[in-house]
Image (spheres, rainbow, N blue to C red):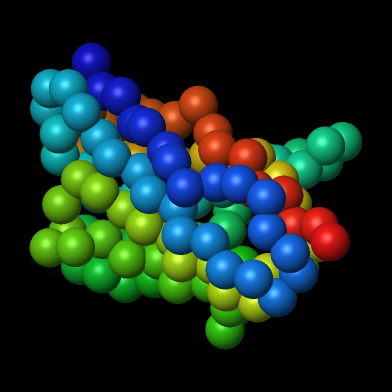
Length: 118
């Protein structure tokens, strides 16, 4: 069983920064891509950023140039550095991991709340 645990969310003023962390624990800890998604109230969950095992990254247009995803040594922890935050970034942020052990299996964390407000 794999668990993903997010941390680092909180309340920040517009223009501020936050760093989200996601750590995996359990068995079969081998992932292809890992990433971050978010869901705002009344909206569908959307991709924020992903990073492959080879460190290729992909970002939503809305966060390009402001957010940076990283995954040290392509292991089982992923970070999301969020700068120049805007009120529209307010959402529940979820960590995601694509299993490299069982094809088609994806894992999700419970989410960490990010609120951008003055």
